[in-house]
Image 1 (cartoon, one colour):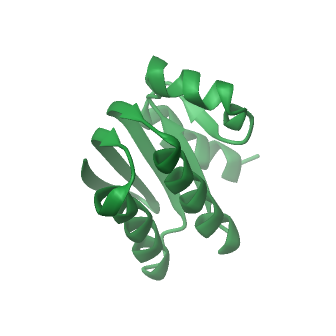
Image 2 (spheres, one colour):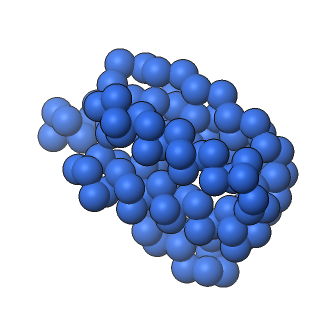
Length: 117
């Protein structure tokens, strides 16, 4: 699994590639979110367009990232959720708790729209 980071204003976009199947590389995503929070970045978009498959460990890491951000007053949004990952989110009923967007640009824009409403 690969993680690419891009900062847009005060929003971090983390683009994931590969499989999220647990293990140290998946935990690296949670560590990255924690480190962003320590740097004062509390709004994060995880772009899943490059994720081929995810298991329950991958879902657990997404939940951990969301909890970490929520506990610091931040927010997590998911972008470019593939059909395979989307079906997993639907089956586990996690689709209801994640904010999902068709792409990272739309997810980032939604943070700014919320600020002005």
